[in-house]
Length: 327
Image (tube, rainbow, N blue to C red; front, side):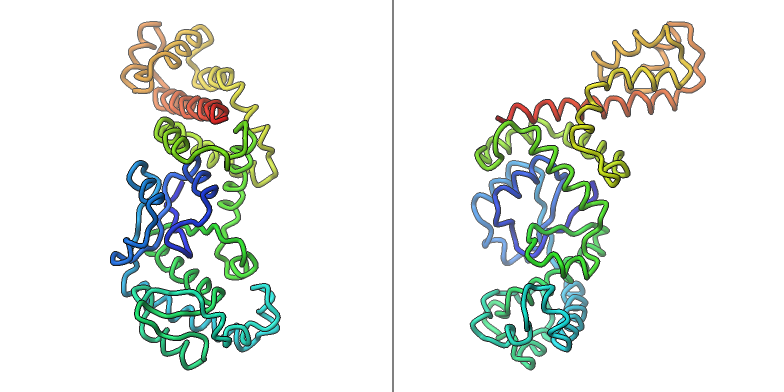
């Protein structure tokens, strides 16, 4: 899975989202200025200290400057067509809402934007400067953080992800969501919910942390297999079909080895080696094994790939099995 830039907050407010991330994500990177790290909660720090899930990323001056330009242009568009754009934010007249000081409840820290953002917001009467940054409406804060996340994601060659679905219409309109990633993420959630015997909310997060650390290689394999099956997922491949696929993994391994031209008689021996000895995925070990059986060493690269791919699938199957133990 590619790196993920998380927004709009420093950390997810939902423990359930964090639990899902621990079971699925390779890594996600919240945008946190260095001087604001003391704002992180103890529970979030515990995840940072005990897993490899979270890696903080700081916005640069250029990130803030470009995000300011993009967000100003977007805010001007929204305010110029309030009745056209307001439904994207579940509002009737967003300009009117933004100009109500009672709605300025969200603090955007000064490290995230240029001075032009403060000038624009105060001239338009949609926010006020405070010591730490600027107080603005929730919708405007989400608009700004969307563009900041996009800039950081562009710089880091990463996708962006949010756990806030309140403004889905805006994120869809802004082409923030990438459908293959969204489909795969939803598919993974469905799998995890299908396999875990009880509600994820009832499982202590410390147990989820320990589970992640015990299954780290299997989570990588799980992601690799989801990526492999993205096209089928896009066609509506059901979660149970994905699980069933791994109940037949060793027959699939047999088919792959046959396809390399090794021969049927070699399959039981190679299968035994693969299952019982991880070293068999090295080309040297495979070559020696085949030579001992009198096989001609012609397709070693293809055979190595077949065995390596099957090992990944075997790890994935084991991960699906282990998820059931989280009950």
